[in-house]
Image 1: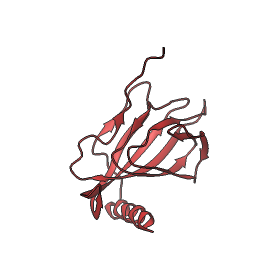
Image 2: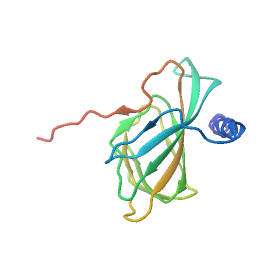
Image 3: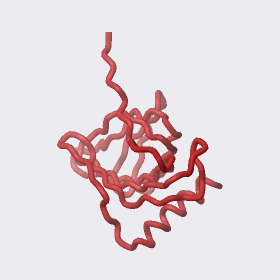
Image 4: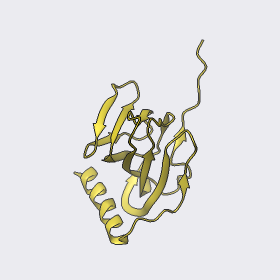
Length: 147
């Protein structure tokens, strides 16, 4: 119930803004492009600290794959457009499509995030609920060398 309320509240905040605006963006030629649509203080706590809900739109070009990473709070995601391969930890890769939703627990390894299409882009809306004082919202997973 609380999760639904948080997602609904974050989406209402976006609607109240009217038009999505980018506060910052990130892109490189090999990875997905992300932009912050909204960052709203909420009346909840995460890990005993006051929380913020940050909403991102992440765009994956054809065949683009994101690097493994973690987030300091839970993620509630929605596939806006295209197809999205998604896996948390050692879990099975889920094949998602426009209209599907997903969830990532706080600090879980987001092991797979990719656009399986070689022709069409994928767009994902992600709402991250995190402590307000957190500086790094996407925590890259250190690369490990295989023996």
